[in-house]
Image (cartoon, rainbow, N blue to C red; front, side, top):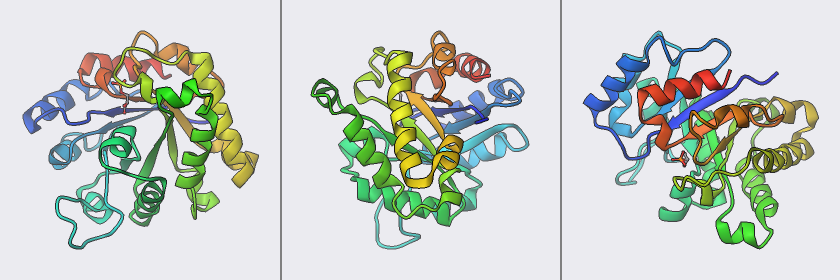
Length: 250
Ligand SMILES: O=C[C@H](O)COP(=O)(O)O
């Protein structure tokens, strides 16, 4: 039985006081037994959020890391630095990073390995663009991105990875993939992982759906056989909405 996981991706939103106000609101509320709850915040918020959420079931994640531990990489943050702060999760390969910061499957893979090196749980994003969906390439794109990300990842590590299937055309657009469609693609991703690691490992890997998930549609996704939670952008920014998402994942 896979434990559902709701991860909020705040993207480039919230100052430190705003993050702290959010933490105060969700404490004791976005904490549902049997559901993992994670807030992936901008780097500047991480120390304050780790402190504010200490002892709660709401964990803190980053939205990116560099694959090296240190070096002349102006503006970058390493897994070593995140771990030092008490961060537990890190989003890797979000489509916005692939599109605006030229992240390739190879870079995504190096980042996944770097996350493991520092004991961080990677949330690995895969998903197709609208034109790829229209050209019937959804599964091919997801297969290549998924297997690329898991290159050199052991079976023991693989079961800890969280995969987030996010069709790019559904992100922030209000156009969500139907639950059936998302389940079919996620089932296919699981099949690819089964081909690499065997069914028992693939069955243990949590795969989220992401793309215009809200309190009003979370239950629909959670009812699907392969969907184990959601990576949520816009609807994770308001405490009340985030709390409902975590409750809806039960
Ligand atoms: O990481 C989250 C996704 O990009 C989804 O964003 P959204 O929920 O605003 O569509």
